[in-house]
Length: 580
Ligand SMILES: Nc1ncnc2c1ncn2[C@@H]1O[C@H](COP(=O)(O)OP(=O)(O)OP(=O)(O)O)[C@@H](O)[C@H]1O
Image (cartoon, rainbow, N blue to C red):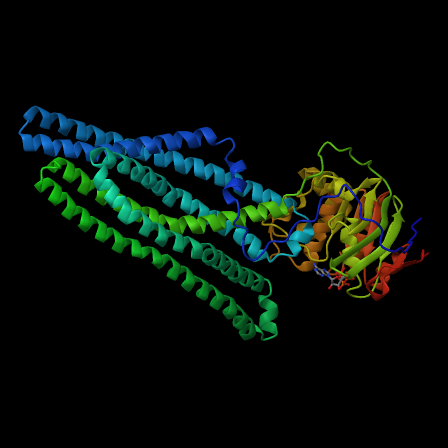
């Protein structure tokens, strides 16, 4: 027999997963690469191979310039054999450099895509296993943007900018070394003029880019969130004539995005100052080379190498500068994705933890829970629900019935106290073991795209077609299924079935899960009296020795309950009943 014992707050339980941290509007951009490093494991050899290929390709590309210098000198000296030799070497270098560059790009993109696929998988799994409270307390569009937009952005960066960036950095480094071998004086002059000014420009860009890109990403997420939220609310917005008001609110998010993008563009344009610097440096170098050649301090071939290599240096530097903006954006996207993974990845209960017995007592011990600090919805509740018992939870609107249902189903972890089944703390059970014992049918049921049979099979017990058909029959739903265009093969989704029909699917699915405890949260509210009665009869049969917890407003449902749990003033405080 159930008994309710109101208590004060009890000490926090131990062993439960810690509360997930909330995602901030702006990402944590510290130690992003260190946080991303674990995702490289398993790809390190391939990454090293890709980098080695890139370095080899860059080395050959630089050697092409040196070969041109030798060719010019051989031509100037009238050496026919030397000329032919250098022409052959030049072609061989160009061909080999082309092949290596292609191979290195291919490997780098391949490794990057594999790493991203791993991150996508991990983030999706982490969000799928995250506590319900985490998912509820973040805007859907925000989570969606991190799982799709950020990964797509990173994919674009890996496929296009990253190979160019790595190759450009390698060519830059090799070219500087080569030029130092030719004339350390010229390269020193070039570096002394170019590097300090370029460093100031790039550092100024970096300082502004972090916040600018983070604000754009946050503003884009806000636009996506407000738009995705408006889709399910479209009908309501139109009925209440609230579309213009909604557009105003959307406009504010859009303005925020526009402002953020303007700041981002201004920040990016700062890098254009590098072009002016480059033009000045090339002009100076040409004059200096001409002077040195005139004084016989430099061969024409070396001067040609310098001019070609310097142009290449600046061309590559331009690529690097352009890529820096993309890299900064990718850095923010990576930080946002890693934040999501860190926020949602909980230490999962051990999968080899003992399976609770098939039947048992569901117990709340000193349970307290609130959505916000200092506003408890459930407070100090102790309750034992015997195996096979039927409990009806009733109370005023907003009094906390659904919240209690979610606590009983282990969907929420209590702030104080414990909820346990057959002596096992629910928060220490793996999702699979928990769902094999306790199932909740919520007020609003969402179906996934697919056939009715596929939706019904979405339970941990993985029922086959005959079992689905048998359960439909047992629940008295055969007539309804037969009335659908293709029976169990009918494609369904939230918009193809009525709310009541969605509830029928969810109830049948819950019975198919074959749990020890079945919790129905207003589950028959959208169904006509006759069907509701039939389902309740069927559930009584299906309930068998199962525990059935019914959350209800309707007096007739309450009347069928053996216990009535009243929840005045927003707190579960007493049980009235049992009822005969
Ligand atoms: N996800 C949430 N975030 C913040 N507050 C919430 C959330 N869900 C419910 N609440 C608040 O908690 C309180 C209890 O809500 P709950 O849905 O449990 O009540 P209920 O008795 O089931 O209501 P109803 O009869 O309307 O279904 C309400 O004040 C509600 O506003």
